[in-house]
Image 1 (cartoon, rainbow, N blue to C red):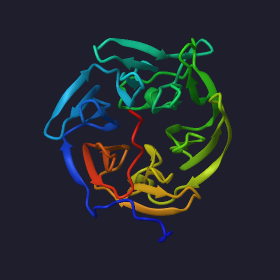
Image 2: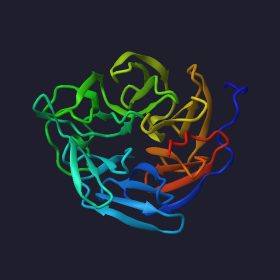
Image 3: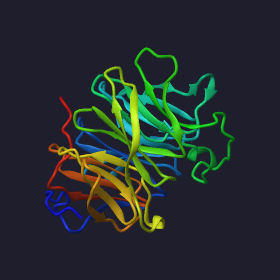
Length: 291
């Protein structure tokens, strides 16, 4: 344990702000409304929490999982049941961003991020085809599980890597020169170098988790403003230095699926964990997006 790095988690206990869901995922902070948006996969809903109450943002989401808000304010949605990535505009209209590769349907897009230049990256494990959350087992049309890039004018996503067992969470370093992608089945995080054109090189193992994986696996992942990597794992959220050393673990009462930084200063961590949503203040904030 590296004790020379500033402790990130400012509060010793997390606060549960909402509960009663089937399985929460995909949290993203909405600057426009100062609220949290998150998925409830089995119930096929996306919810909003405004600091007081939870309301339904969208229903019949096709088992939405990972979410992100793009540069134009659209909500990017990874849909497990349809194997596509969609964008929901502020007026409620929905367009498809990605659904196939090489003419074949994707597996089940899972998590998603956008680079400052507008390019979109997403992971495509098989979970939405063989998981009880979806309710219907579907055979894979692709023989691999990939990480993809979507350019604004592209007809299909570009395959960046196809050697994962179950690519899941992903996040950029603060300067976007590196992309971290974890593999839930391999229990590790890989680190890629990002070229100016968005393609990836490298991809060696950056960090491997150990412990009781019944209490969590590598899934949701973010980077803080110091460049440390935060990743779900056994017991809660693991904070890892840029050098790949474990700094600390935040204990969370339920198994963590995902989380995001929120608040005007990005100094709160909002956590989707099984049936609930939690939050905790952090001493090291996330990156505040350019306005």
